[in-house]
Image 1 (cartoon, rainbow, N blue to C red):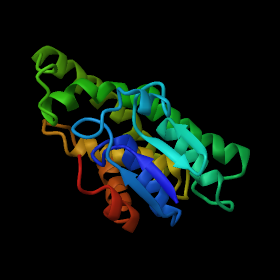
Image 2: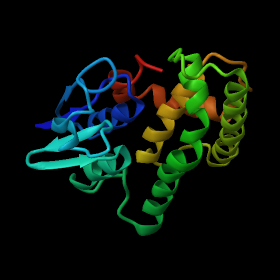
Image 3: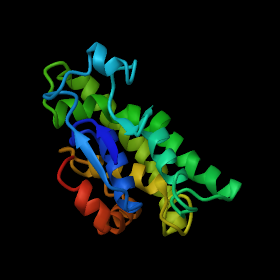
Image 4: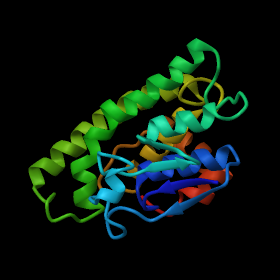
Length: 206
């Protein structure tokens, strides 16, 4: 049995949960992080020295970093379209996994923590607006790409890239601000949100 350590409201935990559901992998989840068990303890740091969630326990194996975990889960299965064996197709999946982490994810942090989490530490109006502007600009890149593919991020088949991007778009659409209409992004999101694994594991949180 796989064990996922991390609270359900974490987008990175939900990446792992959605992947497990797509692969029909049974797992149990334990609440760690804000509002639950403290990750800043020797017990947790022995599993992840960064004191961050999620952590995956697979027997005696311990793994952290959500994108590494979802790659591992796909790799431990028989060949799957979630993470193609072909080097070129796999690279295209990796490209969007890395883009989400390095380009998209940093833009929303301040605005999301201000507008959704209502964090007292994130209430500088100028920083909120700067975050929203950067987020909108980067989402425009995804809009142009999806308008071209008319399918999924890495091509015609659903992949790990769509799990990571789908949750990012879910957060974009559930943050209260005057966002521009990105039709290709919203059409893509509706395709992803109709998947049973998304409904089961991801629909309840922004």
